Image 1 (cartoon, rainbow, N blue to C red):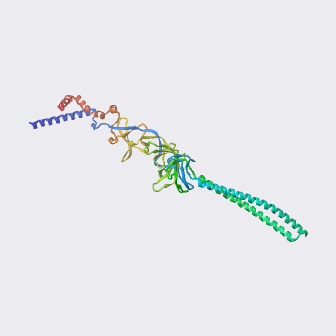
Image 2: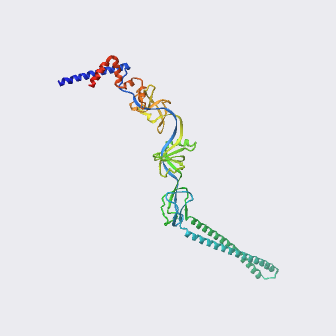
Image 3: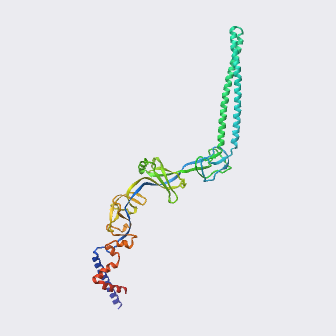
Length: 445
């Protein structure tokens, strides 16, 4: 009895399934008889081909470098008595940084001033001697002339003439010696003045001033320590306004950089790695004179005013150097590009919501935009997501369009996508309605 019931149930299920298949085949033939009715339109995301101005850029990772770095070292030795700044302060050129005990040098200045005064007094004495000896020489010369005349007249002896002549010659040599002493005294005074100037200069070095504008680093020596001239480093100052960003570009792009640089300085944008804090614009100011053979890149350097002081020495930043702007370019999203055995292509949506595979020639990639050199026209629609479901001739529906978008797909695919209702309607019109209803009741039971 149990076996008979199972057999009857199986025959009933087979009969119902055949009736459903016959009804579906009739409905499909009435709709147009196309194959593949079980596959509906593929949902995709699309975008329009547009014309845009695309900047041609060089992207790289750059390293921030200070415009200049100064190591502050004392030029005189002594005890460091005072520091006028805090670590990390921004200082202006000429600002006081530290002071070394000036008293030893002040004493040397006083001593040098005294030596200079003494030598000036000696100069005055030598000049007075010269005046005295010059007067004596003049008198002796006149005496020698008179005695020479009297000797010629036979009034005086030869001994008297020679005695007065020798006295006149001795006084002449004394005058020459006085003049030499004056020159020596003047030279000594010049040496004293140079010594005094040098000591005063050394004294000025006891107060240390900032040589540039910048930010101070760690202060390595505290007040009270003894410092040595030109050896002890007190601190460093990094000039950060302006500031450099150094980066490398492949040698293959060196020609582009040189070509576009002739039209003016190239703009360079710098952003922090997370692109949240730093956003500065500068100019390309330096191209290295050789290519690094180990990396195949050439070093470039751009200058930023860094008015916000967000660029920090040693920081790594994302760099974009704009070479030029390619105007009126055909652009699609980068995700639309597909690669196959025959090259690159995109899926283009036609007016009847079917797609065709279109070979293209891609150009530049700028962020999420792809320039199309050949193969597309402005205003065409391309598929950007969902390409894996597609083949040439596939029907598509746009994601986010809802029922309205599906309804626009007038054709077999739209009706078949509505499930059993599309197949049931022809069956009812062919007189199979009673059978369908009866089958439905049996299915419910």
